[in-house]
Amino acid sequence: MFQQLKLTFVLILSMSFSLESHATSDICSICSCDHSQTNIDCSSRGLTSIPQPIPPNVEYLNLAENDIQAINEKTFQNLSSLETLYLNGNNIDKIEIGTFDDLTRLTYLSLSSNDIKELKPDTFRNLSSLTSLYLSHNDIQAINEKTFQNLSSLKTL
Image 1 (cartoon, rainbow, N blue to C red):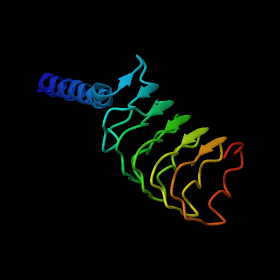
Image 2 (tube, rainbow, N blue to C red):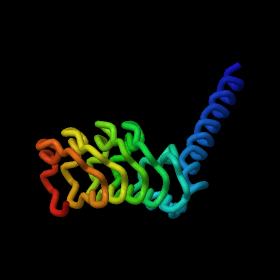
Image 3 (cartoon, rainbow, N blue to C red):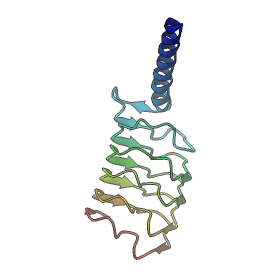
Image 4 (cartoon, rainbow, N blue to C red):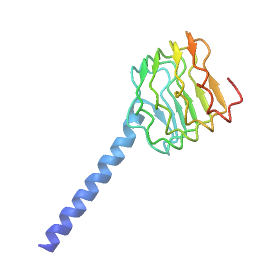
């Protein structure tokens, strides 16, 4: 009985590792990843959404020149190692509040050449490490005065 229980536990544990390993490599079947999955290039792939799951250890993520229209608030959840994020050259017209909340180490964010019309006050609320933010070539018609208030490290806008 104990042997059977032990064998069942080992089987469940091995299946769990197998599924977890497969999940982190899904994005790498679509995009180009380095061996450690810290640098992921998904640029110019015709993507209409951001592939999931994204490995939590990613530091560089390039999603430029696709056809992404919206970013869900949970898209970048638990990516606290991410430092560089390219979202330029898409058709993004809406960024939900909370989208960037978990990106505490993010230093570079490019949102240029999209269809962004409005930046809400809390869009960038937890990006205290952000030094470069690119928003050119959008159709921004309104920016709330508090939109950039938490960007204490920002040097380039």
